[in-house]
Length: 385
Image (cartoon, rainbow, N blue to C red):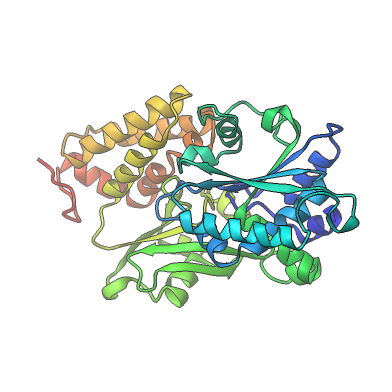
């Protein structure tokens, strides 16, 4: 089973893109008798609801993936960690679990295969950082959701110190698909290194908003125009953000960048939770960066200095620029500071916090200069004094 998952090349859909098969194999080889399998349904990005829709529309696809993964990794207890703000999804999961138990697919000695597995639901706050693996484990143990140093990795020492696999909701739905149709069918879609499809939330100034599922390798421009119907109202396009508030903005020729883990990483961007947000010509690049940093600052758990103090300083500097109090050296300071956060922050929230700043400077540096030198917002969005 692990070899089949390896052949399919299933990667984590939560943003990191780590090999699912390698997680299972790492957990399986641990000698501890108690092992856990966790479905990570914590969604903290604003406007992202992929896990919610998957559980509301087809919970069994995810639960089948959990059963397959648990059997392959040797786990006997499953947990679904989901936002408490998803009451309809939770009801659907409970109904589906009851159906599994009625069919003898949960509990002891499932299908006579010497495999026992049960699943419980645990509700989380919906905080962004709680979706990070080590912070999720802390939350489940009744502690504050804060990241911890790795290694050891969860598959070595996870929940209560026991080997633990943590897979994203969409990842598990892909697992079920692989074992229904086979790895060969699965890898026929997508790219050589990023197989299968990816679900995205398409929003912002685009005509057709909502969830879209496309093969890996589809470009941002194709999604925006062919599926999204282009910028709403026939307005011009400013930029597109991929990966939520901590993702970077794309503009110009980079809109033809294939959406897969490899191309995005090479270009300094992240796939993140699967959010695609379109900004039209009437938006201000500095204001876009400021709003993202205000959100990131609020979501920081405060554990590391880089993220706790860094996001605050970013917010203060960007606010000054949008209010006509920017300094000539601010752009250079923002770039230098952003590169430092990438290297020094404790978890991915802090490491990616600078993305909205660095990418808007990359494409729209002239707007920063216009705000600072001429005290003018070209888009007339910022109320510069």
